Length: 383
Image 1 (tube, rainbow, N blue to C red):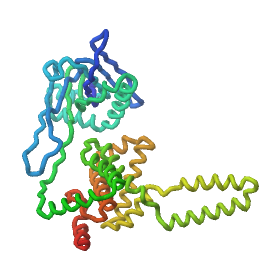
Image 2 (cartoon, rainbow, N blue to C red):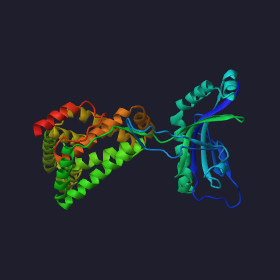
Image 3 (tube, helix red, strand yellow):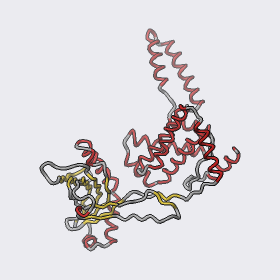
Image 4 (tube, rainbow, N blue to C red):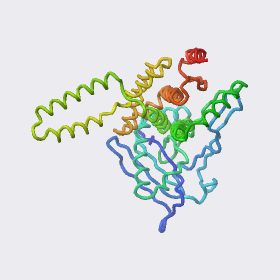
């Protein structure tokens, strides 16, 4: 049966790179235990040419002017604005056997054949991305980060020695709702900003850092970075909260009993043992999840119990990512279930707003999950 390569490519602008004695470098090596191959090229002529997404908008307003992204494809680099530059090309691929009729259809540029082959590549996308992460990370760490910091594009690829096809992906566009500010909104904005400006400098500094991280999350395009950025302002507002009061009281009683036991049976070393135990006890701070539950109970926002359950899930995902390095699982989860991302953003916004302003008045959003009516009712009561 004929063989085709299916895989994933990253193409970087190798900023400021040149060779002293050769035109380019090309290395191919096996990767891991799943029969993957990685092909690395550094030089002026990437194997699969250059695809750029041109000028693109990050946002589009619903009902406004349509936004079109026109990819620019250059098989010959000297025809592009990047002529004369160096590139770092990383191709992570797997050779597979395919039926002869599928191979023949691919060589005829049959769209259905290409679609089937790209689907096979996308089924292994996480594995390909892992290989690319390891490879470009090593290149950047051991040789120079300038080789791998300017990502021009990434694409799925299907190829053999006669033909290739690529499916490039660019930055996503967020579709926004049109908004109108009414006279009441402008009056409230003036009042809120004037009141905020009269706060003490210490409070302004703390709130500024919290809101800075929230704003960074709003504009972040990378899903993993957005996920982590949303958790940071939540963690910052939780610093002023302890855990469940009943549980803390129970722990204090247990600690008191242990100290009594040490004084009774500790012998000559009882003072050292009590000092050691006190140092350990002081480190037993409430967990983030316990502190968030305390905040949620205090705020008593609509459906706060659901917020507690959701935060436990998000905190576990964060711990898997940071402490165990399970980035593939996190990345897959965030990419597949975009609702989690919007839910986390909603939680961050509502509880940051509660801590800073002590109310439930935040901007409306179509992804804010089933809380609009309850929030409006709460606002009416407060007024």
